[in-house]
Length: 599
Image (cartoon, rainbow, N blue to C red; front, side, top):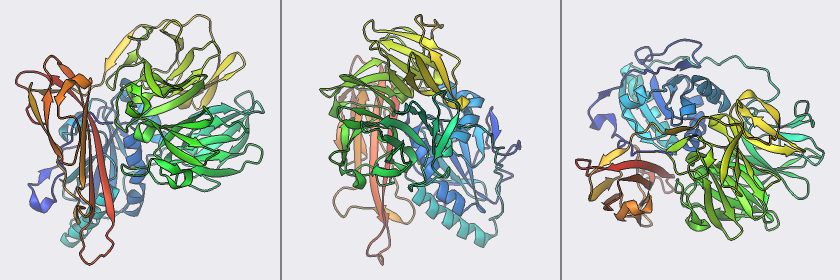
């Protein structure tokens, strides 16, 4: 979920000028340090990895997970530091960052940088970005996107050897100080479903469990899962979405395990029905036997049209699982991130995170575009509320100008309207298709992420208050003052006419591009609105492109997706390990005389 092209990945330090790493500064201060302020000077002698992230970003969450092994293996030489750099207004709130650090199990120091001071010092252009600083305080590498764990692991080993020999490596405990645990029955719950018994089943995401509550929504009946991260019959990994199957069982989106699980509420047995536990990457199969196809951060599930529909947040698509056939397949979306309506195969989504079936429509909370959308039985995707990646806020009224802020849940209401968990606005909103109006049902909810109907009440999963909250559906909506925002990322000024696009990629140390079976790189370019580009859109194998900007269009977003394949460069190894590198950018541009001619 990136909004501008990153700086090129630097060559190894021996081949480039040595750049001193700027100091770490953030108005929000430090988390996970026991109240201590950290400085690079005090960390001299350690390998420091900066992770520039924001907690709305699924790619950033992928990076948190893929670096856990490296962080643990090299804990005596490597200090991982998260630099939280917000996109949404809500993400600039310090309390929200504190919550996110606990919610996602961040076990290293985090600098809260709401004004992007350190982001700017390091010339970061994309979420997520990783920067490596050597024990002498110099920047030695920078990587944008995900999938770099193997390259970082190799670089860390090289730095350990080099600076161990020079005597400039210092081993020992890191500065991480775990916060005091808090006793609550739920901890950052994600989604809920009403069981046939009338009890409520909740995904207790941060504790890696499912919790069954009595009908009062408070009394704990039982816990399902060990409470530790894992991919076994007794363990989940940050589960989210829940959906009731016709036979009374519950399908679970086991998000960080990249899998679907099924729970039998009668016996408590859990089985895996889709996914391999591995994350889907470009080039992987998009259909086939459910247990043989990789998935990517399934965030919600819904039973519709005799299949389980999956909000596949990690790849900006909708998939389906057919229990009868035992297969999965892509149902809608291209993997490009953005807001484009139309036939399912051509539509774009941006981190779909909530689903609700309602007759001939499947409603979708499309979080990164702050949008409410739906797909119909003919496979056509439409948008009810929302305009794109960079516009959000809290505005009621006619749907075409109404605004949401990163919604995660949607619930079908009896009258044909839908309730939207407007997560970053801490509100429950309502869209009525009959009037095409958006209203506010309730405010002062803390990061609502899902809601279920119980009789005449709606029970909201108030994730950041660690509880379920029961509300009576009001006849009159609460009126709130209009608020509109655009993301803090400034547009890039580009000159009219021809724009040269270059994606700079260097294979990590010890690897080379894999050309054994043809070109090893791929570049896909498109735009919002589509009229922005008069030429240069589409796919190709070169990592450069001449784009032609159309006359009469003054601003828009360039969508760039780049992929490269590299393999270990060891002639003695008959079967070298190979790796796929992928990065997507959404680049806001403004057409102006005197703007850049090269991006």
